[in-house]
Image (cartoon, rainbow, N blue to C red; front, side):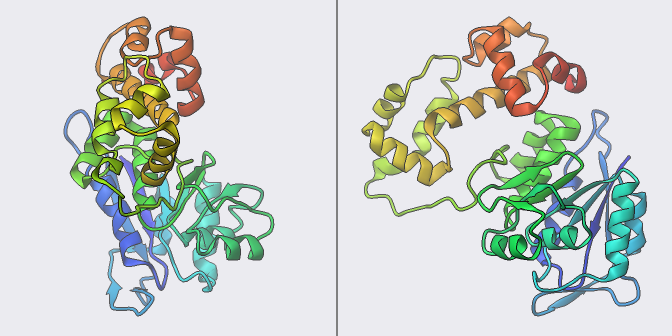
Amino acid sequence: MHIVAVLALDGVSALDLAIPCQVFALVTGPDGAPAYDVRVCVDRSTEAMAGPTAPFQVPSPYGWDGVLGADTVIVPGIPSERVPDARALRLLREAAEGGARIASICTGAFALAHAGLLEGRRATTHWRFAGALAERFPGIDVDPSVLYVDEGRVLTSAGIAAGLDLCLHLVRRDHGAAAAASAARVLVMPPQRTGGQAQYIEYPTPETDSADLGETLHWMRHKLREPLSLADIAAHAMMSRRSLARHFRAQTGTTPLRWLLAQRVERARELLETTELPLARVAEATGFGAVETLRHHFTRQVGTTPSAYRAAFRR
C-alpha cells in the first residue's frame, strides 16, 4: 500500500495538517480497500505544537523517522520565519534521496527550501510569503500566482485551500481522474482546479444576478461536444464579450475558452478510464472533433497520450 507520511513540524498549521489526512483517507482501490496508509509523523520527544498560538499538541504513534519508509512525504505549513529542526531536514533529504515523492502545503515550502530540495526548481507558496521565499532562497524560481507546481518528484502548493488541489492532483496522478473526482465530491469541491489557475481569485459582489456565471458554467459542461465560441458563451450569459471575460476571470481565475478546454480534457479522462470507446468517439464526445486534436490538447495538459493514459488507468 502507498504510504503517505505527513511531517508535522513544530508550529504546524492545523488545517494544512488535516487536509492530506482527509483527502487520502477517502480514496479506495477497485476492491474497496484503502488506497493509502496515511501516517502523521511527529517529534516523539516533544510532539508538535499546532501554531501559531499552539492551541493543542499533535500526538502520533509515528516519529519523524517514519518519513523514511514513505512513498509520499507531505510537509504542511509552518511559521515562515522558523527554521525547522536540523534532524527533520536531514530526514527529508534522506527520504527524497530514497525515492520518496516530496510535497508541501502553503509555507511548508520553506521547510523544503531549508532542506535544499527546491534549489534550481520552480516552486510556489502562499502569495503573502512568496517574496520572502524568493529573497531568502534566490536559487528557487518562485511563482506566486499559481495554485501548485508539479516538478515530478517535488511538488509545492499555495495557501491552505490549494493543499486540497495538490492532494487531489496527487490522487489523480496515482489513480486517475475518477478516483480524484470521487474524493472531490465527498469534499464538496471542484474535482480539478489546474495548477496554473490563479491563487487569488476575486469574488466581487455581482452588479446584477446575471453576473453570477454558475448557470453558464453548468450549461458549458453539458455542451462540451458542441463547437462553442466565445460569442455563444457570451450570448448564454447575456453579456458582452468584454464583460464576460471580466466576470469569468474574476469567478474562475481563467478565460472562458481555457476553462472550456480544461473541462473537455477532464471529460476525456473520465471516458478513457470508464469506457471502451475508441479514441475517435472520445474526441467527438468531448468536442475535440479529431483524434489528433484530442491527442494534442490531452498530452499538453496531462503529460501523456490518451492511449497511454487509458492503459494506466482503465478500470
